[in-house]
Amino acid sequence: MGKNCKICFIDDDPIYKMFMKRVIEMNNLVPKINITSFDDGDQAYNFINKNKQNPEELPDVILLDINMPVMDGFQFIEEYSKIKPKINKKITVFMVTSSIDPSDMERSKKFSEISDYIAKPVPLEKLKHIIGSFG
Image 1 (tube, rainbow, N blue to C red):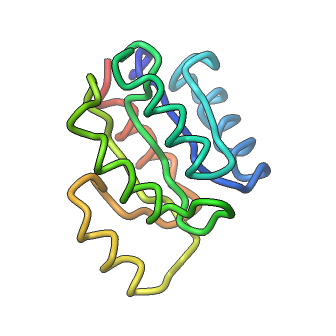
Image 2: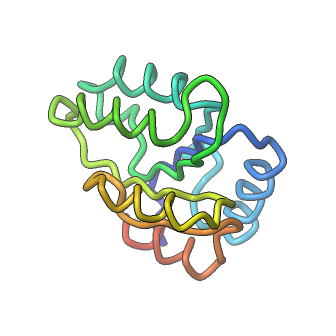
């Protein structure tokens, strides 16, 4: 199942990231080495922009939070969409958030880069489906 899938968490909640990494590891969904994380959208954007021509460094899947300091999820996706044509890899982005605000959900639909809007915590079956579509 998805052993070659590289997952990236862009989220400022260290407990949530630790929990999700443990769920992935305990269910043997991907090796630990295939999980990266950033505390805000700015860190993630800089990493992706720097590595846009190095597909082996880039994630296959991004689980993106909305509410973060420095650069929130929507600011990240706006900047990401500008460099996406230059990225040498297909990256699937999921907006994963605790926000139940209908306007956030509607706003996320305006970005073709966002594949789905998922409420936290991500159900295990949904996570298996996301990861299972790779490798």
